[in-house]
Amino acid sequence: MAERLLDRFDAVLSDLDGVVYAGPHAIPGAPENLGRISADGVPVVYVTNNASRSVATVAAHLTELGVPAGPEDVVSSAQAAAVLLAERLPAGTPVLITGSQALSDVVEDAGLLPVRAQDDAPRAVIQGFDPGLGWAALAEATYTLSDPDVLWVATNTDLTIPQARGLAPGNGTLVAAVATATGRVPEVAGKPEAPIFRTAAGRVGSARPLVVGDRLDTDILGGNAAGFATVVVLTGVDTVRTVLAARAAERPTYLVRTLDGLFEPYPGIALAPAGAGHAATCGAAAAETDGDVLRVRGRHEDLDAWRAACAAWWAAHPDARAATAPSAIEWEDGR
Image (spheres, rainbow, N blue to C red):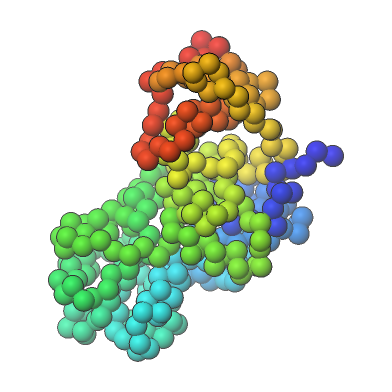
Protein backbone atom coordinates (compact mmCIF):
# COMPACT_ATOMS: atom_id res chain seq x y z
CA MET A 1 0.00 0.00 0.00
CA ALA A 2 1.35 3.43 -0.92
CA GLU A 3 2.37 5.67 1.96
CA ARG A 4 -0.23 8.27 2.82
CA LEU A 5 0.83 11.81 3.62
CA LEU A 6 -0.38 11.29 7.20
CA ASP A 7 1.95 8.31 7.65
CA ARG A 8 4.98 10.62 7.66
CA PHE A 9 3.99 12.27 10.95
CA ASP A 10 3.34 11.42 14.59
CA ALA A 11 0.84 14.20 15.35
CA VAL A 12 -1.40 16.73 13.64
CA LEU A 13 -1.54 20.31 14.90
CA SER A 14 -4.74 21.60 13.33
CA ASP A 15 -6.15 25.08 12.97
CA LEU A 16 -9.89 25.45 13.56
CA ASP A 17 -11.44 28.35 11.61
CA GLY A 18 -11.25 27.47 7.93
CA VAL A 19 -10.07 23.91 8.55
CA VAL A 20 -12.63 22.33 10.90
CA TYR A 21 -15.43 24.87 10.71
CA ALA A 22 -16.53 28.19 9.25
CA GLY A 23 -18.60 30.07 11.80
CA PRO A 24 -20.82 27.62 13.70
CA HIS A 25 -20.88 24.98 10.94
CA ALA A 26 -18.45 22.17 10.19
CA ILE A 27 -16.62 22.20 6.88
CA PRO A 28 -17.98 19.22 4.91
CA GLY A 29 -15.97 16.08 5.61
CA ALA A 30 -13.76 17.65 8.29
CA PRO A 31 -15.24 15.86 11.35
CA GLU A 32 -15.05 12.50 9.61
CA ASN A 33 -11.44 13.02 8.53
CA LEU A 34 -10.33 14.20 11.96
CA GLY A 35 -12.00 11.15 13.46
CA ARG A 36 -10.06 8.96 11.01
CA ILE A 37 -6.79 10.57 12.05
CA SER A 38 -7.45 9.86 15.73
CA ALA A 39 -8.66 6.33 14.92
CA ASP A 40 -5.32 5.72 13.21
CA GLY A 41 -3.57 6.49 16.50
CA VAL A 42 -2.27 9.92 15.46
CA PRO A 43 -3.03 12.54 18.12
CA VAL A 44 -4.66 15.78 17.01
CA VAL A 45 -4.10 19.04 18.89
CA TYR A 46 -6.24 22.01 17.91
CA VAL A 47 -4.24 25.24 17.80
CA THR A 48 -6.45 28.30 17.66
CA ASN A 49 -5.91 32.04 17.62
CA ASN A 50 -9.49 32.56 18.78
CA ALA A 51 -9.11 34.06 22.25
CA SER A 52 -12.78 34.88 22.74
CA ARG A 53 -13.76 31.39 23.92
CA SER A 54 -12.37 29.10 26.61
CA VAL A 55 -10.65 25.88 25.57
CA ALA A 56 -13.49 23.98 27.26
CA THR A 57 -16.02 25.82 25.09
CA VAL A 58 -13.97 25.14 21.98
CA ALA A 59 -13.75 21.45 22.87
CA ALA A 60 -17.51 21.30 23.48
CA HIS A 61 -18.15 22.93 20.10
CA LEU A 62 -15.89 20.41 18.39
CA THR A 63 -17.73 17.55 20.08
CA GLU A 64 -21.08 18.99 18.94
CA LEU A 65 -19.76 19.01 15.38
CA GLY A 66 -18.78 15.35 15.62
CA VAL A 67 -15.12 15.79 16.59
CA PRO A 68 -14.71 14.37 20.11
CA ALA A 69 -12.27 16.59 22.00
CA GLY A 70 -11.51 17.70 25.54
CA PRO A 71 -9.94 20.93 26.83
CA GLU A 72 -6.56 19.19 26.88
CA ASP A 73 -6.79 18.81 23.09
CA VAL A 74 -6.96 22.57 22.51
CA VAL A 75 -4.16 25.14 22.73
CA SER A 76 -5.29 28.76 22.43
CA SER A 77 -3.48 32.03 21.83
CA ALA A 78 -5.10 33.33 25.02
CA GLN A 79 -3.24 30.64 26.97
CA ALA A 80 0.02 31.50 25.21
CA ALA A 81 -0.45 35.21 25.96
CA ALA A 82 -1.24 34.62 29.62
CA VAL A 83 1.82 32.41 30.04
CA LEU A 84 3.98 35.07 28.38
CA LEU A 85 2.77 37.74 30.84
CA ALA A 86 3.15 35.41 33.83
CA GLU A 87 6.79 34.96 32.86
CA ARG A 88 7.32 38.74 32.87
CA LEU A 89 5.24 39.94 35.82
CA PRO A 90 5.02 39.08 39.53
CA ALA A 91 2.04 37.04 40.66
CA GLY A 92 -1.01 39.16 41.38
CA THR A 93 -0.02 42.00 39.01
CA PRO A 94 -3.09 43.82 37.59
CA VAL A 95 -3.54 43.23 33.84
CA LEU A 96 -6.07 45.15 31.75
CA ILE A 97 -8.30 42.79 29.79
CA THR A 98 -9.30 43.99 26.33
CA GLY A 99 -11.31 40.99 25.25
CA SER A 100 -13.66 38.30 26.45
CA GLN A 101 -14.36 36.74 29.83
CA ALA A 102 -12.51 33.63 28.60
CA LEU A 103 -9.37 35.76 28.18
CA SER A 104 -9.85 37.14 31.69
CA ASP A 105 -10.15 33.60 33.06
CA VAL A 106 -6.85 32.37 31.58
CA VAL A 107 -5.07 35.47 32.90
CA GLU A 108 -6.43 34.70 36.36
CA ASP A 109 -5.43 31.04 35.98
CA ALA A 110 -1.88 32.25 35.23
CA GLY A 111 -1.73 33.95 38.63
CA LEU A 112 -2.36 37.51 37.50
CA LEU A 113 -5.18 39.93 38.42
CA PRO A 114 -7.62 40.74 35.58
CA VAL A 115 -8.94 44.32 35.60
CA ARG A 116 -11.03 46.39 33.21
CA ALA A 117 -10.02 50.00 33.90
CA GLN A 118 -6.94 52.23 33.87
CA ASP A 119 -7.86 53.34 37.40
CA ASP A 120 -6.98 49.81 38.60
CA ALA A 121 -3.29 50.55 37.82
CA PRO A 122 -2.64 47.72 35.36
CA ARG A 123 1.00 47.02 34.46
CA ALA A 124 0.07 45.24 31.23
CA VAL A 125 -2.66 45.14 28.59
CA ILE A 126 -3.69 41.86 27.03
CA GLN A 127 -5.82 42.16 23.91
CA GLY A 128 -7.82 39.34 22.37
CA PHE A 129 -10.76 38.99 20.02
CA ASP A 130 -14.29 39.53 21.31
CA PRO A 131 -17.12 40.09 18.80
CA GLY A 132 -18.82 42.35 21.35
CA LEU A 133 -15.80 44.56 21.94
CA GLY A 134 -16.63 48.25 21.62
CA TRP A 135 -15.01 51.67 21.42
CA ALA A 136 -14.92 52.15 25.19
CA ALA A 137 -12.77 49.06 25.72
CA LEU A 138 -10.37 50.06 22.95
CA ALA A 139 -10.16 53.56 24.42
CA GLU A 140 -9.37 52.15 27.89
CA ALA A 141 -6.50 50.16 26.40
CA THR A 142 -5.26 53.26 24.60
CA TYR A 143 -5.32 55.35 27.79
CA THR A 144 -3.46 52.65 29.70
CA LEU A 145 -0.80 52.20 27.00
CA SER A 146 0.06 55.91 27.12
CA ASP A 147 2.46 54.78 29.86
CA PRO A 148 5.43 53.31 27.92
CA ASP A 149 6.28 51.00 30.82
CA VAL A 150 2.97 49.14 30.49
CA LEU A 151 3.41 45.88 28.58
CA TRP A 152 1.12 45.17 25.64
CA VAL A 153 0.48 41.63 24.45
CA ALA A 154 -1.94 40.67 21.68
CA THR A 155 -3.20 37.12 21.52
CA ASN A 156 -3.06 37.30 17.71
CA THR A 157 -3.19 39.73 14.83
CA ASP A 158 -5.44 37.88 12.36
CA LEU A 159 -6.94 40.56 10.12
CA THR A 160 -9.90 38.38 9.15
CA ILE A 161 -11.80 35.38 10.42
CA PRO A 162 -13.86 33.07 8.18
CA GLN A 163 -17.59 33.00 8.95
CA ALA A 164 -20.48 31.23 7.28
CA ARG A 165 -21.29 34.40 5.28
CA GLY A 166 -17.67 35.10 4.33
CA LEU A 167 -14.65 36.83 5.85
CA ALA A 168 -15.18 39.16 8.80
CA PRO A 169 -12.79 41.52 10.66
CA GLY A 170 -10.48 39.70 13.07
CA ASN A 171 -8.49 40.65 16.15
CA GLY A 172 -5.78 42.24 14.03
CA THR A 173 -8.15 45.00 12.95
CA LEU A 174 -8.89 45.86 16.60
CA VAL A 175 -5.21 45.68 17.54
CA ALA A 176 -4.46 47.99 14.61
CA ALA A 177 -6.91 50.56 15.97
CA VAL A 178 -5.09 50.68 19.31
CA ALA A 179 -1.70 50.68 17.56
CA THR A 180 -2.75 53.64 15.43
CA ALA A 181 -3.96 55.56 18.48
CA THR A 182 -0.87 54.84 20.60
CA GLY A 183 1.94 54.58 18.07
CA ARG A 184 2.95 51.33 19.75
CA VAL A 185 3.36 47.75 18.48
CA PRO A 186 2.28 44.80 20.66
CA GLU A 187 4.11 41.60 21.32
CA VAL A 188 2.14 38.74 19.74
CA ALA A 189 1.74 35.48 21.65
CA GLY A 190 -0.22 33.32 19.23
CA LYS A 191 0.12 32.53 15.58
CA PRO A 192 2.23 33.28 13.59
CA GLU A 193 4.74 33.01 16.44
CA ALA A 194 6.40 29.64 17.00
CA PRO A 195 5.82 29.05 20.77
CA ILE A 196 2.14 28.18 20.45
CA PHE A 197 3.01 25.38 17.98
CA ARG A 198 5.87 24.08 20.12
CA THR A 199 3.54 24.04 23.12
CA ALA A 200 1.00 22.04 21.13
CA ALA A 201 3.61 19.52 19.94
CA GLY A 202 5.00 19.17 23.45
CA ARG A 203 1.58 18.43 24.85
CA VAL A 204 1.49 15.10 22.97
CA GLY A 205 5.25 14.45 22.92
CA SER A 206 5.45 14.85 19.15
CA ALA A 207 8.80 14.90 17.35
CA ARG A 208 7.36 14.99 13.79
CA PRO A 209 4.14 17.02 13.82
CA LEU A 210 2.29 18.25 10.77
CA VAL A 211 0.77 21.73 11.03
CA VAL A 212 -2.53 21.97 9.12
CA GLY A 213 -3.98 25.37 8.30
CA ASP A 214 -5.87 27.47 5.79
CA ARG A 215 -3.90 30.71 6.27
CA LEU A 216 -0.39 31.38 5.03
CA ASP A 217 0.15 34.39 7.28
CA THR A 218 -0.65 32.61 10.55
CA ASP A 219 -0.80 28.80 10.35
CA ILE A 220 1.89 28.22 7.73
CA LEU A 221 4.20 31.06 8.79
CA GLY A 222 4.04 29.94 12.41
CA GLY A 223 4.48 26.25 11.66
CA ASN A 224 7.46 27.02 9.44
CA ALA A 225 8.94 29.25 12.17
CA ALA A 226 8.66 26.35 14.61
CA GLY A 227 10.57 24.12 12.19
CA PHE A 228 7.62 21.82 11.50
CA ALA A 229 6.19 20.49 8.24
CA THR A 230 3.15 22.44 7.09
CA VAL A 231 0.19 21.76 4.81
CA VAL A 232 -2.31 24.30 3.54
CA VAL A 233 -5.89 23.21 2.88
CA LEU A 234 -8.05 25.18 0.45
CA THR A 235 -11.18 25.24 2.61
CA GLY A 236 -10.66 28.65 4.19
CA VAL A 237 -8.85 31.89 3.42
CA ASP A 238 -6.00 31.12 1.01
CA THR A 239 -6.25 29.85 -2.57
CA VAL A 240 -3.93 28.18 -5.07
CA ARG A 241 -3.07 31.61 -6.46
CA THR A 242 -2.14 33.12 -3.10
CA VAL A 243 -0.11 29.99 -2.31
CA LEU A 244 1.76 30.35 -5.61
CA ALA A 245 2.57 34.00 -4.84
CA ALA A 246 3.48 33.36 -1.18
CA ARG A 247 6.57 34.96 0.24
CA ALA A 248 9.29 32.48 1.19
CA ALA A 249 8.50 32.36 4.92
CA GLU A 250 4.84 31.49 4.23
CA ARG A 251 5.29 28.68 1.70
CA PRO A 252 3.77 25.37 2.82
CA THR A 253 5.54 22.05 2.60
CA TYR A 254 2.41 20.47 1.12
CA LEU A 255 -0.72 21.63 -0.70
CA VAL A 256 -4.07 19.75 -0.50
CA ARG A 257 -7.65 20.71 -1.29
CA THR A 258 -9.25 19.25 1.83
CA LEU A 259 -8.33 17.03 4.76
CA ASP A 260 -9.00 14.08 2.43
CA GLY A 261 -5.53 14.77 1.05
CA LEU A 262 -3.92 13.58 4.29
CA PHE A 263 -5.11 10.06 3.50
CA GLU A 264 -3.70 10.01 -0.03
CA PRO A 265 -0.13 9.45 -1.25
CA TYR A 266 1.56 12.79 -1.84
CA PRO A 267 3.14 12.96 -5.29
CA GLY A 268 6.86 13.54 -5.63
CA ILE A 269 7.98 16.87 -7.05
CA ALA A 270 11.16 17.02 -9.14
CA LEU A 271 13.04 20.24 -9.84
CA ALA A 272 15.34 20.74 -12.81
CA PRO A 273 17.07 23.67 -14.50
CA ALA A 274 15.40 24.91 -17.69
CA GLY A 275 17.86 26.99 -19.62
CA ALA A 276 18.11 30.25 -17.72
CA GLY A 277 15.03 29.40 -15.66
CA HIS A 278 13.53 26.66 -13.50
CA ALA A 279 11.24 23.72 -14.16
CA ALA A 280 9.34 21.23 -12.03
CA THR A 281 7.25 18.12 -12.54
CA CYS A 282 4.54 16.65 -10.33
CA GLY A 283 2.77 13.53 -11.53
CA ALA A 284 1.82 14.11 -15.16
CA ALA A 285 1.98 17.89 -14.77
CA ALA A 286 4.96 20.18 -15.37
CA ALA A 287 5.75 23.88 -15.10
CA GLU A 288 8.64 26.14 -16.01
CA THR A 289 9.60 29.79 -15.83
CA ASP A 290 12.49 31.82 -17.18
CA GLY A 291 11.28 35.22 -16.07
CA ASP A 292 7.94 36.71 -15.04
CA VAL A 293 5.82 34.27 -17.06
CA LEU A 294 4.94 30.81 -15.76
CA ARG A 295 4.08 28.08 -18.28
CA VAL A 296 2.13 25.09 -17.00
CA ARG A 297 1.56 21.79 -18.77
CA GLY A 298 -1.52 20.33 -17.17
CA ARG A 299 -5.16 20.99 -16.43
CA HIS A 300 -6.11 24.13 -14.53
CA GLU A 301 -8.24 22.13 -12.08
CA ASP A 302 -5.48 19.54 -11.44
CA LEU A 303 -3.77 20.21 -8.09
CA ASP A 304 -0.59 18.52 -9.35
CA ALA A 305 -0.33 21.29 -11.95
CA TRP A 306 -0.43 23.90 -9.19
CA ARG A 307 2.09 21.93 -7.14
CA ALA A 308 4.47 21.89 -10.09
CA ALA A 309 3.79 25.59 -10.72
CA CYS A 310 4.59 26.45 -7.11
CA ALA A 311 7.81 24.43 -7.14
CA ALA A 312 9.10 26.05 -10.33
CA TRP A 313 8.08 29.57 -9.32
CA TRP A 314 9.46 29.26 -5.78
CA ALA A 315 12.77 27.92 -7.12
CA ALA A 316 13.01 31.03 -9.28
CA HIS A 317 12.23 33.27 -6.29
CA PRO A 318 13.76 31.46 -3.30
CA ASP A 319 14.10 34.46 -1.00
CA ALA A 320 10.95 36.44 -1.79
CA ARG A 321 10.19 38.77 1.12
CA ALA A 322 6.88 39.89 -0.33
CA ALA A 323 4.11 38.15 -2.22
CA THR A 324 5.42 37.68 -5.76
CA ALA A 325 3.12 36.50 -8.56
CA PRO A 326 3.87 35.77 -12.22
CA SER A 327 2.89 38.49 -14.65
CA ALA A 328 1.03 35.76 -16.55
CA ILE A 329 0.35 32.03 -16.30
CA GLU A 330 0.16 30.23 -19.64
CA TRP A 331 -1.83 27.01 -19.36
CA GLU A 332 -1.62 24.15 -21.79
CA ASP A 333 -5.41 23.87 -21.58
CA GLY A 334 -5.71 27.51 -22.70
CA ARG A 335 -6.90 29.10 -19.47
